[in-house]
Length: 159
Image (tube, rainbow, N blue to C red; front, side):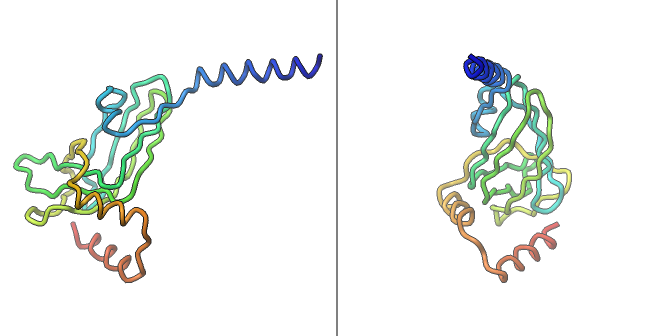
């Protein structure tokens, strides 16, 4: 009898917690398309975006941004380079939460100037196939210390 009561209590608690604290796993594109979120991306200077996202749902969200995602510059004449993400990001938001995330990437347009602090960026899209392949490769492979040094050097001189 005691065991049945414990099991019944556990099942009721599990059921209630599952219905109250549901989690929805979506891609960034799907989250926008279904109006689960609103977001604003502003360049922090160099190759980092300050990405503020608001969850509009009563459920938690797990948002995946894949390697190869390209955030587009939203400057007036679009004179600034877009930013390519080379590492997959998983963003987690509680119900109705607004949170800021640091998004890091690389410039991906040689004919435009580097991103400047305060420039806004749009949601973006997946990059072309060659950049997606490069991003996926960098996402799954470690770089050596010389490459890490060069990347850090480029980032500090990018502003």
